[in-house]
Length: 451
Image (cartoon, rainbow, N blue to C red; front, side, top):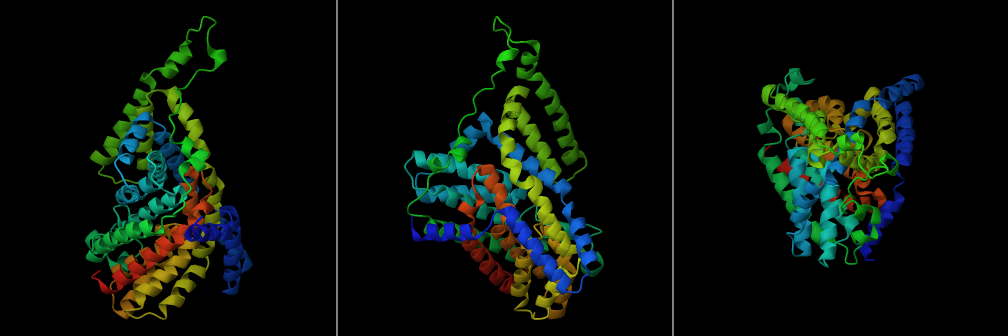
């Protein structure tokens, strides 16, 4: 085991499991809230308000996990990803193509990167091992996860989309922010390109010299193995080994085609007639439609679904515990006071650094970009005006800090770990290096380039 791997594993061992971390954050934020003068009853109420704040979001993320794993079990998807994973001929090409593929999906929509990034890592690691290429599977998971970062300046970036929507909560102060001034600003485009280049270089340099290949993780490797055809229960067969009527219906494609037709009609209406955009619900609808279509019948879909549910266990309760902490931030004075403290030290050159730093800390407690902007948006825009920079620069700097929290907090990492069937502490240590690259580049770009 080389030095870098020992450091990454050592950092992982210092991080408690996600449930324990959520409890530690709860104790810390309660203490801070009380110290800031919030009453005990107000603090308790804020926690309870937050505790169930993410109920719809939790179910949406559960479906993303389950349906993406179910999609990954289809023969069509396996053949497609396996075909792409066979393209690389060197270790560098494996790293580069897997990271860029994950980043491209994430730029299109953040949920695609979350759902499919771990699947990409599994197939690329499996094919690399078969070719005798030395790829460390936990490291590859971390690297493809770092590629997910570009969603912050992609087509589904939460805060910029919110600020370009009529009626947003800061419209009387900032007006609408056209996307050409946020995610399509020169600084944003340059930053995405620079970060991907830096990530590719860093990944190649950091790659462990004594890799733990994917065969060392049988649960993960099993996700890349063909799913055996669904066999009927022995007791459901006739004595003469003839399928029953219910078995024939379950194996027939007509029921799934009927449901696919209904889902396809809604998808066409949503995007074509209403002109609506991609959101979590429409993404899950597309995933459900694709899963049913590619599995072809109810029996195959049901069997794959049973295997896939295992990947969703980390988020079912955990998200609500983090939401309680987020409620403490949002519904007491903690978030406002914390952001305001950093704002008092700002000038036009230190503003991006301080904004990103404050956002990085807050994002550990509030794992939602839209929610974080709701907390820090007013103070960020007011401070930006006071120091003579645009509100857009503040939003973009805040997005840099927001994703630092996403990379180093267990909240999002457990999703990738759940899909890949691996302990998140096996690879979260590498994220600290990727987060540092992201932060330094982001602060420099949004301090000195046009935004």
